[in-house]
Each structure stands twice: as C-alpha cells, then as structure tokens.
Amino acid sequence: MGRATALAASRAGASVVVAARGEAALRTLCDEIVGASGRAVTVVGDMTRAPDAARLIAAATDSFGRIDVLVNSVGTNIPRRAIDELTAESWQMMVDVNLTAAFHLTQAALPALRQQKGGLIIHISSVAAKKPDRSGIAYQATKAAVAALAHGTMEEERDHGIRTSVIYPGMTDTPLLDRRPAPIPPELRARALQPDDVADACLFIMALPPRAHVAEIILSPSRV
Image (cartoon, rainbow, N blue to C red; front, side, top):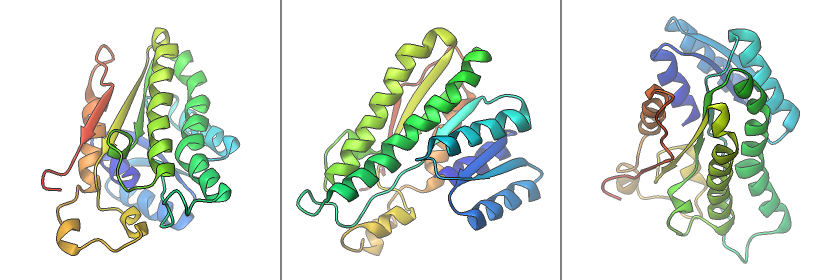
C-alpha cells in the first residue's frame, strides 16, 4: 500500500520520500519514480525506532524544504495470532510495528508541521479495527489504537492546522495475506482490494483543501 501510494503521489506531481527496512525494494521503487520523471528520496530504516523516524522527516525537510503529507503504512501480522498462541514477545512485536511506529512517525513530524502551520497525517489502519474478525487480537487491538492515536493527535494539533485521517481497508491483495494461518482460495483473493485502491483513497484526501477534514474512510471489497 505504501509503494502504491508513493507511485500515485509521484504521478500526481508530489516529491516523495519513501522509507522501509529493505534497501533493495526501496531502490527499485525510487528508480521507478525517477524513471517516470518524478522526484524521490529513500531512507532505509526501521520506524519502530524513534531515531529512524526522525531521519525520515529530516530527509523530507532537507530535500524538499517542507513536509505536506505523512502516510503511515507500516503494519504486519503473524500466522500464530489466536489468543492462546500469542506470546509476550509476539504481542510486543505487534505493538511495536503496528502502533509504536505510528507514534514515532507522528511525534517526529509534528515540529515541522507546526512550524509551517499545517499538514496532513494519513494512517492506514484496517477494517478489523471496526469489525472484529479472525485476524487476531493483537492485530485488531493495535490497528484500533492507531485510530485513537490519529484522532487524539487531531484534537491536540488542529489549532496548528494539522489534520489526521484514518483509512480502514478490508482484505487487500498484499503479501500480508500470505501470513494467514491457512491459504486463501484463489477465487477469494481475486475479489480483494488492490493496493492501488488504497492509494487512490489517500490521494483523494491529499487533494482536499486544508479547510476540509476527512476523519475516516472505510474501504471494503464489494464482493467479500
């Protein structure tokens, strides 16, 4: 979803900074953006670490002078997700990746957004945060907490012109589906959302004027 959003934003004319732990994937994405006459900077880092989140924001402001939109698409899940299969370690890993990374990114971005008196933070949550399912309590709890983080941030920062939005995608055809405890039937996967659908939702929010605020979007497959 992050990759699709970066490509869509670049095609729309944005300069983008992309971050992930995998350097090779980042380089491929950056080459694709630049090859299409876009502008992109890469940051290899782990957003569960506050210094890496700070480096991402610094790369944006150093390279392009400001940061208009932060899209948090960090997220994971695990096959052994049932409550009696979770361990203290796997629970903490889920909290770190799905929630703590969102906190670090938000906290790192706020000084720049306050200084420029505006900006937008979009968090990619999950429809599981709205409607409990079998995606696992760690996944559901952390994705719901991301929404609480977003809305609380908005209440504290609206006087600085800072807006937050949360997108709740339903089943989307990403590698995360391969981490389910049982394989997904091909006919079901074929009806899933595509990452480009989530990217389009992000661009819709980005294109709105600062006077408009989209608190939440629930985006679901029409036939699942």
